[in-house]
Length: 119
Image (cartoon, rainbow, N blue to C red):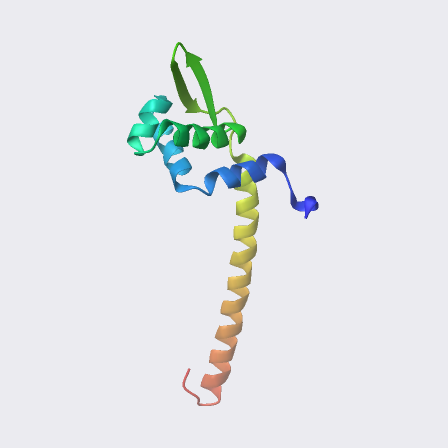
């Protein structure tokens, strides 16, 4: 399985597998926020939000900066081009398979029609 492992991609998909973390990314897309603000917005404890932010930070999707007693979060500098390319590659493969299935179904339907059967 190691042949399919790419640490950055693995960390990203793991981080994105949680709805709260996706929500944090959506929130940070609108502007920086403190962990306290994020915890309040998602009705969770500071400890819980720190864990979510830590996962996002390890994936490079969020960066944090501590100023005084406040830790501010912002979207990370890492883009998702590698993950987007993986998804697009698989989307194209599945689209090709469905196109081939459509062709087979059409051929069977045409054969049935030529033999007088209802489709």
